[in-house]
Length: 507
Image (cartoon, rainbow, N blue to C red; front, side, top):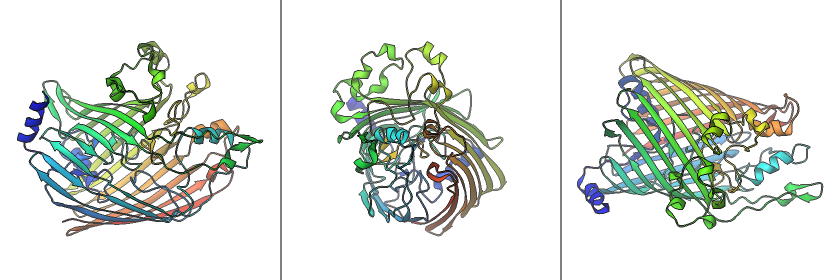
């Protein structure tokens, strides 16, 4: 069977490089908008998407970001949350021989990483935050000096056919229909080393079309060491040192497009992660997502010392109205049985939903409206059955992170976000503005405070512009964050300014 697959891959015409997730030239944005105009043939919920071009030299990008007051922004891959100046550079090549391809696109990040006002450990509200810090690896600041990293970035080696691909990659992944957040997989953290078996275009059957991706990879820690004195409360040290092991992640996402309902896409994703020292060698240790969901049917699961998440999603595109609606709902814990799931559907639940609409004017010119709501805070079910914040659980005390950043929703555990975005798209330009309400870690707030008026909430507003001039794409963003009760300190009002400039050169 393996020989048949190998010869099929060698004999088939193949697809070329991929469009990197979050590329600043707005090429992904244009691809998704085009589906609202001409119809969707693929779900756009499993990225990166394949690019049928065959360029040898990949686009080179330089991006500079500046935060005046404190870290701002997410879904920026290799960049870190940092104050001050930060620069990102990438370039690469694509080589191909028959079904074998090599995409080499490394990344360099240089960050000033200046000091800023962080969470106060002197007040009466320390304990709930220490619990979170002990069970996640999400540092406020990445060390106390400048930050420099070189990574393989959006690189991959693949054996591919027209329909499927198998390979090894360090590319960023995005699973799900959201554009500001994704519950299980986004480009918020740097890409991680993983093996992948995935579709490169929808696989057609008599039931409809399917897309999928199966990965097994390695997650790393931030390397930022906690300060023991920060964890001492009334003479007691609450610091719980974390394992120094890397972590193994195994995940699967599947998307189904029913042949009888054009434009509808139904998705399912499941992810497991654990320390490599706890990993077994059996089939269900390497691919645990094949196990049942009900805990009563896997009584040995707790002994495996692994944490897991799952989500279901839908996206429905209506090209006649040039509209799409979508949603994703996920669970940070699993039910004991179907009855348990039925009775407590809201247990450990997070969700997002959104809508996008294109107002077409003339060919190549249109206005795109997008709204999205993401809710990561725990539900009222926590009163009778605490499951803890999203992206942390009992066994993996680094949480669901890679190199100190959450793999899923960039707003982080317990947070909520509402986004309103309008873009004016022309053949050579994109211009737009965004307004957002960002409520920080409401799970911590409800644990620490008994009054309502200390919620840390930002109002983010700003604009962006991108222009293509021959072989160069130039883009700029200017964002402001009006911050109320910064670091949950009552009446601590701040204004942060973020500026981003980027240039991409095509060859």
